[in-house]
Amino acid sequence: MAIKGTIQQDHIQVNKFQLLVASLPPILFTTISGIEEELDTVELPDRTPQTGGRAKPVEFDATQPMHHSLERAAMDAWLRECTDPVSPFHKKIGTLIMESQTTIVKASFALLGLFVFKRATPDLDLENDGEMAMITWSFKAADLTRLG
Image 1 (tube, one colour):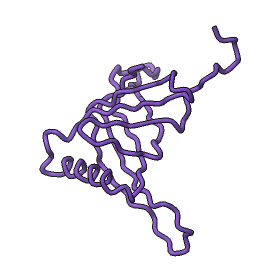
Image 2: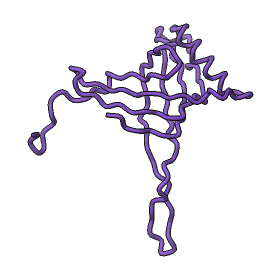
Image 3: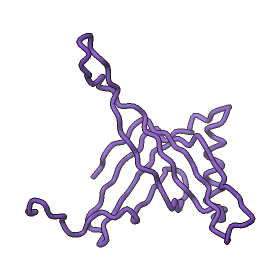
Image 4: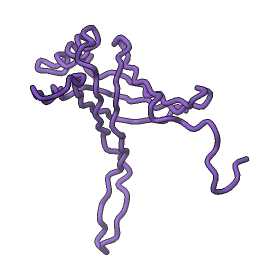
């Protein structure tokens, strides 16, 4: 039992995560933006807000090292699946796994109807000291479900 006002040991760390996508090889994403779940809301005639009950699709970005060529090729192929003519298999199932330092404590989420819809290459600058080039991918999913 935790004492009120104290943080329990073995917290889930923001630097221990994986995003696994069904039918794709494991891809190293170095950052994943926060994923916000939001419900539709309506305003009643008396001007009070009320939930509409439906969850909106979720959207997030993830970055990938540009020099990971096999992983980049897999993501490029997926983006082509999402491009006209859209493949019937463009929507995939993703699993976001976050772990504690000991990996005993985990939080995981299923991303249903996941697809990639945008690729952004990095800003380039000759005066840069040689930072690693990163590709930013933007994703949408129909549903975010907590698994554990």
